[in-house]
Image (cartoon, rainbow, N blue to C red; front, side, top):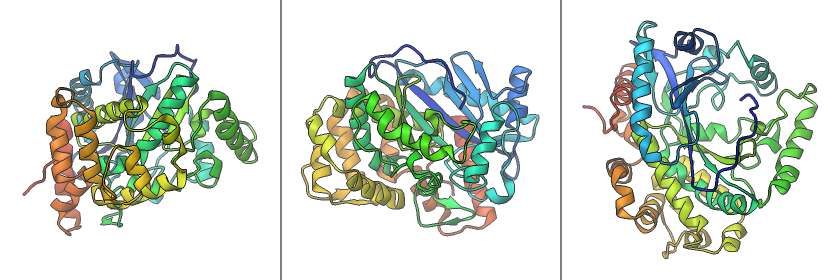
Length: 417
């Protein structure tokens, strides 16, 4: 969240930044534990919000029960990261043993009440979080109860930015169909396969210019981004933020946001999965399909840019609600992705994209995760299937204990008996 010095620009598809967020929960009962500051202190000997450890860094933002893992510097090969993240998760769990806690995956805690249980980070950057809480009320789902994967993709100049932003914008609406992992809110299924994104859609709407419609409009240059996106939100929030605490580019929370401080676009609509292997399989698929769209393999750049934001927003909302079963009937959208039929389920579209745009050899390292997701549904679908309408505390604890084990052991979730 803190402002950092600008980094040298990397060419598109030459390096990637991955951020994975997890909940810290009680080791036995799985309720949230607001002890991220204690965990980071154990690692570094000080109460810092970010600590580098080899190629990775541990950090915290806003709420004390969240810990984030990320690669400290851009990595050229996503395929090298699963074992690295998995090893670090195991180390964190060892550190948490003395605090009677452990890490839990998935994008929302299934029974957390943020009105009562939210604790904000009280140390460095605390003034930022106090400002957020004062303006937006952070003791809500969408603020205090959400864990995601952020995928950062670089660009070197305006020409690369235009093509990359356009390709990502086109893929954003269907990402929840692949990655939804948050079907349960406060102990029940609220009707959304991606509950995190359902809450995210409105969490910062007190200042509408900071998030727009989540799907960003077509923008092609740094200058136009400053004029159309950043300047309006700085003006709008100024009345509530006279000291300028929040007037930085990270106030922009669209589903894909330009981070000019590091010349990257950050994708924010991907729920965190049950283990890093699954997260990074999704990241690799997004990388490869965005690259194909960037190269205009299925449609010219001008045609990609011409589709309306409202058309993409409708598809996004459908995928947030129904996941891989969402019906897509927008002929223009399907044609832009090289899909020749007039309608399909999101699952069918993903199968088409993966098979037609990613060579088999490139898919091979991720095949187990992709097969599980495409055949059994995203993690949210698998969670609901195993719960089987039993939302008792006992059943939820059993299912999410199994998810914790998946994270600790680096394996996919396929259900329990």
